[in-house]
Length: 137
Image 1 (cartoon, helix red, strand yellow):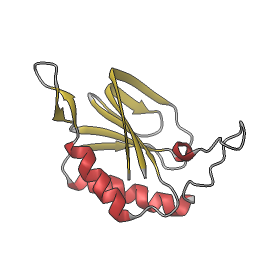
Image 2 (cartoon, one colour):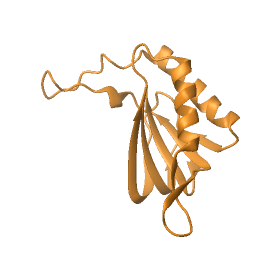
Image 3 (cartoon, helix red, strand yellow):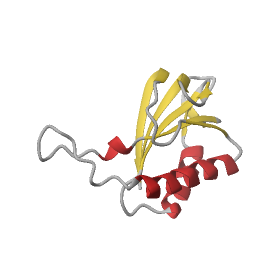
Image 4 (spheres, helix red, strand yellow):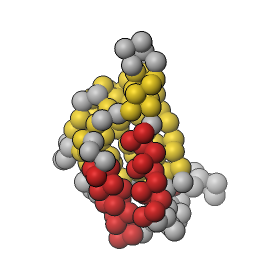
């Protein structure tokens, strides 16, 4: 499971949710990923101190998250110029883990907005920093 996390001033998807200041998170799920991994990454994400304190230091956790599924995080281009996605989980498996990840975040009392799993979305973000972090389990 892979998360690409971007600190934002604002982020929204055209067919679903939006947030103000917080974290925009792309979630990639590969074959073999488990709900235990999603739970561990949700725990890590809510504790990640990447928001600026009053002194401008990255010292605070986020309270708002926009979560979007992104199977292309597991693109493989080693065999040529056209990406292969054979490492990405099948949609039925990925959706279950993605939904579990979102549920784990909500249980932690943070604001969670989501995209629409498997659908084409237009995403609008105003990055802050920019700060981009990749977490993988």
